[in-house]
Amino acid sequence: MKLNYKKKTFAGIPEKYATINKSQTVLILVPYDYTQTWKKGSKEGPKAFLSAAEHIELYDIETQSEVYKKGIFIVPYVINPSISTKKMIKKVYNVTKKYLYQEKFLTFIGGDHSISIGSIRAFGEKYKNLSILHMDAHTDLRPIYKGDPYNHACSMYEASQKHPLIQIGIRSMDIIEKKYIQKGNIFYMHDIYKNDLWMQDAIHKLSENVFISIDIDVFDPSIAPSTGTPEPGGLSWYTTLKFLKKVFIKKNVIGFDIVELLPNKEESSTDFLTVKLFYKLLSYKHIK
Image (cartoon, rainbow, N blue to C red; front, side):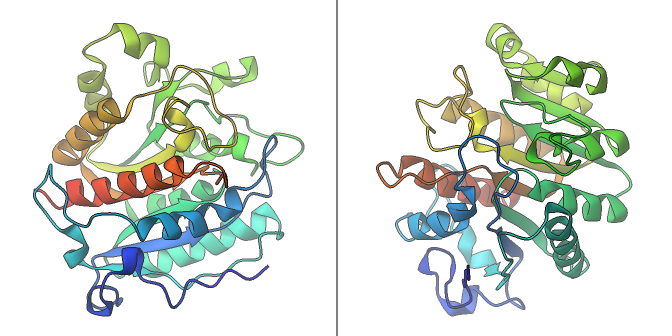
C-alpha cells in the first residue's frame, strides 16, 4: 500500500508557506494500525485528515490569527502499514530526530497509538526535563500485550518509566495497569466531572517541557464517534480546548501527536474535529 502525500499542502495553503525552510511546524503522517485490537482502519487517518483539512477556515477567531503563515511542512514520509511495530517505531524515531534537531515544532497524525513510542523516545533524548501529557480514554500502560511490547495498549509504558506522565480523561483500564500508574498523576474522567480545579492541578504536575499525546477517544463519542475504541463519558470540545490553551500558555509544549482517528465513510465529523484540534493547537503555540 503506497500513501503519497508529497504533492499536498496542509489545507491547500500556498507553497510558500509549505516548504521546510519557511515552516516552523513539521507535520509527520504515520499511517499505521497493525496493533489495533478491535476496529482497524486508523492507518487511513492521515489521509482522511488531509482531506478534511481542505475545508477548514484558516483564520482562527479565538486567537485572531492565521497560524498557517508560520509555515506547515508535510513530511513526504511513507511507511508500509504491514511492517512490524518495532520497525515502524524505529522509523518514527529516526524521522523525529531528523527534524527535531532542525529546531522545528513537530506534530504527528496517526495511525494507532503505538506511533507515539518512537517520537517520545526521540524527544526524551533531547529534552531532559520532559513530561508527557497523555489525553486518552485508556491508560495504555501494559508492559506487553498479546506478546508485543509495542502494542497500542503499551504506548505509554516506556514513557512512564522515563518521564513524569500526566494522564487525563481516563475511564477504562485493565487491573494489571494499576501498578504502573504514577501516583497522583492520573485524572480519571469521573473525578474531572466532580473537580473544578483539575486543570490547575494537572498543569502543576507538568515539567517545563511538555509533549502532548492525544487519543481521539478522550473525547465523548457524541462528538468524536470515529475512533477504534470509543468509550462513553469523555471530554467535551470546549473543556478540552480550555485546558490545552492553559497548557500552551504556562508550559513549553515541544510537540504533539493526535492518534486513533478511524475514518468512517458515513460520518466525517471526527475527521474535521481532528483537523480543527490540530489547527487550534498550532494557534495556541504561537499566541505567546
